[in-house]
Amino acid sequence: MTRLFNDPAAFADEALEGFTAAHRRWVRPVTGGVVRATATPAGQVAVVIGGGSGHYPAFSGLVGRGLAHGAAVGNVFASPSARQIHSVATAAHAGGGVLLMYGNYAGDVLHFGQAAERLAADGVETRTFAVADDISSAAPEESAKRRGIAGDLPVFKAAAAAAEQGLPLEEVLRVAERAGARTRSFGIAFSGCTLPGADHPLFTVPEARMAVGLGIHGEPGIGEEALPTADEAARLLVDTLLKELPEDVVAPVGQRAAVILNGLGSVKYEELFVVYRRVAALLGDAGVEIVDPEVGELVTSFDMAGVSLTLTWLDDRLEELWRAPADTPAYRKGALDAAEPDLDRASVTAAAQDTAVPAVPVVPVAPVVPAASDASRGAADTVLAALDAVARVVDAHADELGRIDAVAGDGDHGIGMRRGSTAAHRAAADAQRLGAGAGTVLTRAADAWADKAGGTSGALWGTILRSLGTALGDRDAPDAARVAEGVTEASAAVRRLGGAEVGDKTMVDVLVPFADALAAATAEDLPLADAWDRAATTATAAAAGTADLLPRRGRARPHAEKSLGTPDAGAHSLALITRAVHGALLDHH
Image (tube, rainbow, N blue to C red; front, side, top):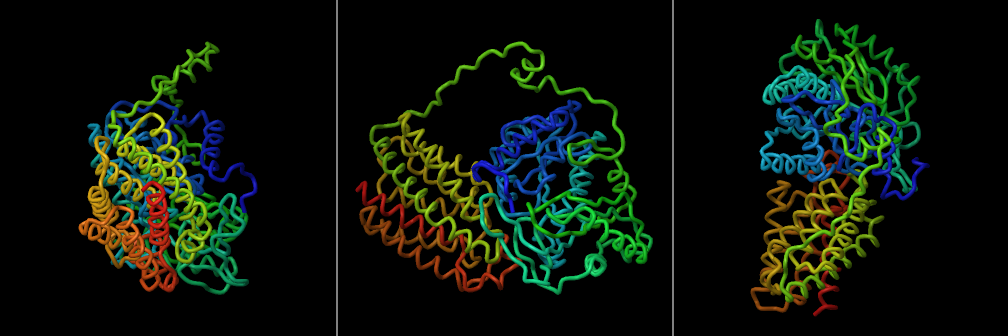
């Protein structure tokens, strides 16, 4: 378990602060993560990677020459927000475009996709690529649904080495696609991980058993088997991966492979070496030539006791890129010439500190909000009260939401919702004090929720609040019909963004009937509080109904059967929130 922390909510930020302080030779901090401290040649493609904290040395530890140009870092097991990714990519961009790379998880796909849209709007040519190497999480015919685990490293490295050679963006993307198509991973675990501040692991494994088919976010395994010896574990890992070869590899005999035996957090290096000796022998017996193997902690899952094996089947080009030198805080290979520091991009304060010249003091500028009518500012008071009610109900039920989420997911839904709702209320209060209207209060809350929560829920709740803010605006006092229109648009926007529909066992199973019920009630000219009450009752029933569904999307999908009988955590939290908001509407009626 994690023993050394201050405020669990600040753990990821404080860890990143300490990391950058310890590795100034390689990285410098920017809003949302880190970028290289060394200069990038003008016109070179910037490979920007990212994901949640809790996976070190992924992702921040892989920033440096020969590997990533920057890394966006989210909260523990939560994707960074689109705004954080956009910030890091903007800082890393050297004029050759940006390739955003990440593991294939719903939250990462949403946030990196939104960041790519924002970069494109800025005139920065951008492409995205999701690594999907975990063979346990989907069948070969559905490989696009697979999770990204330790296969992140060889795919990131191939693309970054290609960028280092000066290739244009489209060719760097093709290299990533080639490496991804030839990378497979499989993992096992003996105990789950415990998040900072938690008093129990996200999942447990019975005595003398092991979990088989692991992700890297504390999800339980796909199945269980008897606890193996080291040699038996090696055989399971190797045999499982050799059963699924890339389409253009007929047999393992005569093939070359980059091999990674990855520790997931608390399996000691000596144990890994005991397993690897047998892995190497088995691959050799199968006729596989091992190229530059890596044994150690490379993509972890906090303190999970487990290991994974990754094979990247190499051709001449991929082998060249795999062998290429790299120099990062946590991954080094070969030798590189000395690099110049990126002084042009360093902050004035940092340069001043380096030369012992006092920095010019920065006078803070008060944030400005758009002009608003008195009627809209009055409505903003109600919005703030509603967001306060949201934060309070989420805080009261955070542990329950985590337990529900842990049945088939990673157990962090309550933590993420607490971070997001608290940040949203704080941002809304700041805007309201500055005289903002209802629309601006909601959009400021939307950005704060997405930034602090990260993950899928952060992206979706940011979308919900922004849709409502756009509908309400800052000019008039919104009536019940306009609120209903905003909720309807929020429902449509969430479905567009996440791709889920009713029946997939997600928050959409509550959001759609809630929006429909609210629209129907307001069409009958019911006052907003009464209409919301009716819709909230519909939401509560819909959330309970998700217990009978099997998930078709998200991290719970590989564990569908385990979730049967338990409601979806996102659906349940939305139902709780709709009822809490009703209370705020009654108080401000």
